[in-house]
Length: 332
Image (cartoon, rainbow, N blue to C red):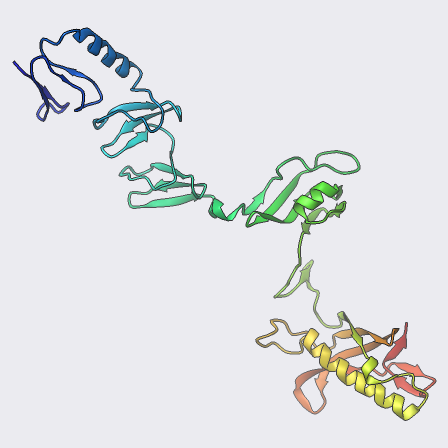
């Protein structure tokens, strides 16, 4: 007489085992029919499988698993349960490079491709963190890979590193100290010892598109001095003994410098400049004539003929005995 084996719901027939047969395909166990020789061996093997929760390496899951069946993954050292589709961890997060099919709100999934932890909210996986995929490298503030010490005292310092795309962009620290050449090369891109301030040290350029404030004060405000340099050799010698020629050379150089300053230090807000320097700002331009250096001073004022236009105009502040007149030039 055949054995009829029912599922755990006691209504669904799982297997029909004829006399003398052994069913080794319907489930992960060997189901024994009536009058099987040496049935005790099969029975004891099944007990060991149940005792160890079918312990086996990853990729060698139990055959023909049943919903609710336990399997100990000996590779990951995790106990899992079969949900009808795959074996899922009974605790912690699913660790996989592909999204897990789940119906349980609150299930965690560690995405090994992007190095991110996500949670199932009942409809989809929502990111817990980090906010940027690990494929793009480290982002945000983190501690250094190893202790950074004061080069002089060898005392460890409390330092934070700002990262973007895996590259260190700045260093936060609570006190000034001298950073070693090796640490400077790693975090600041400089192969020399570097003195770090108490606060923020930026490894690269600082480009300010808005107002630049120090202690609440705008550092690009009225009467702030700006500097630039310019080669005026092509505009003639301002020290030429020929007075009319020297004066015309000075005027030609001033016009050229004034136009150059309007490009370097904007006199208006437009598509190219997000900042307009305020009226009465000063500019001091270091000028070179065939290697000889001098300084010319300019002032940002309204154009006398066009009140709506700001212009850099030279200041007649310095008396020239050679020209017997005032110029905006002072020798270095």
